[in-house]
Each structure stands twice: as structure tokens, then as C-alpha cells.
Image 1 (tube, one colour):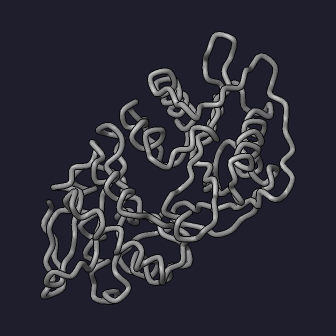
Image 2 (cartoon, rainbow, N blue to C red):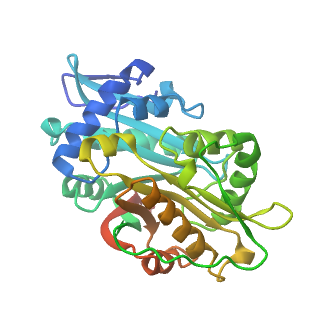
Length: 324
């Protein structure tokens, strides 16, 4: 792990697989104050710590005051050399904010990104004013805005026709990973090649973070294919178990929507999304949500608002201001 300075009396070490519950407790304490709508449990954190792409010794840290957990951070190093992006995912217990811990974690992330020659991205909710102020004091500037959208599934869902020549494939309930992971991964990489901060994914990485996650709802996910079986578009949906347990509300989160370039502008994404929402109602979800890049180059925000989604909250990606 890159050396970094902490306030006096605090120590640190890498996160271990056995720290999943500790990390989840820190996240729950932060959510109780920040109210961002993000809920994680020990199983979610264990899956993150088991990510084969995560170098826990170098890219994770648990901060302790004696034996009491104070903060945690994981750095997600994405993309091949020359195209790397580092996403910093940190949390400081509300009782320990204002001690300089968050600043120390940000400096650790900055040093690691510089070591890798990578861009550093830190995404925070606009409403977490303390985190925003800390990042700006550290010389970070806002680079991208992300809108969280919600939809009430009690409202009518209007089916829409697929473009001619395509066939719809419901991906579950018995998801065939060998059949679908490679073409869906390829379609995802092609679709997101021009998106901000996106880097190509290998099939194993795609599976771990998307279709292999325990929150993946294959029965509410869909692909549209041409007559020869090529993927033209897809929607992957999740239902977060931790959020359902803590809120008592079943929300279908539309995690990834992709349309290949030659099929854009023909109503495909809207048709697939309508089908997913109809299935979500069938399985008992009350709402649906998703997050969209406010400057998405494919006009996705318009697709979602036409499907009945409405803005709910925003997140901001901060990056270090380039040296002059």
C-alpha cells in the first residue's frame, strides 16, 4: 500500500475478506446521516472484496482508532495501461468527520492514480456537502453530473414495438452465462466506447460486476437479437437485496442499457425498457430507478423521461484539477 499520513492516534491496514461486515457497518452509519438512498450489506461488501481485479493489499484500506473502525476506501483500477481510470470509493464514519481522515484518503487515491498514470474519479452525492467541500479544498473540480431517476410502477407502462428484424430474449429466470456473457460483454463494450470514464471490460470482469452479482434479476433483463443471433440491444436489471430489506420497498434498478450504434434512433431502447418495466410489475416491484450521465452522448435521458422516469437526485464526479 502507498504510504500516507493519517491524523495522530489512527492506524491503517488493507481490508481483508473478514472485514465485509465492518465495511457494511461503516456504510450504513454514513447512509443514516447522508440519506443518499444507497444500501449495502455484508454480502455485497464480501462480493466486492472478492473481486479478482481488486488488489486488496495495494488498493484497499481500513482506518482504525484503536480497534474501532473509522473509515474505509477501495480503489477500483479499471482499463488497460494507457487508458486506466481509478474510481475511489471511500466512507468515513459520521462521528469521525472533520478529523482529516477523508482528506488523507483522497491524497492516498491521488498518489495511487499518479503512480499508475491513471485518471482519478471520485463520485459523491451533491447533497453530501461535507464531502464536496473536502474535495474542492483538495483541488478537485466537478467534471460530470449523474442524475438518479425514479419511476412509480403503479403508473401505466405502455408497450412499444421492436424495430423490424429483431427478436426479444428474456434472460431469466435460468440465466445461461455461457450463452449470454460473451455477446453481452461485447455489446456493452461497443455501446459504451464513447461514454465518459468508460473502459472496456473482459468477460470475467463483466460477469463478476453485472450478471454474476447476487442482485442481478435475469427474469427482468432482456436482449434483442438479429436473425443471426447478434445482440442489437439489451437491458440488465438488478434488485438490491439490502435496499429491499431496509426500506421495505421493492425497486428494480436498471443497471445497464445498451444499444449498438446502427440500431440507435429506432426506438429499440424504449421498447426494451417498457418490456422490463412490465416484467418488474409482474414480479412485484413497486418502483424502478436508474442513473444516467446528464451529458450522455446517445440521448439516453430523453429515452428514460419518455418511459416515465423523473429526476430524483444528482451525483457529481470530481477529478483533480490539472497542474498549470
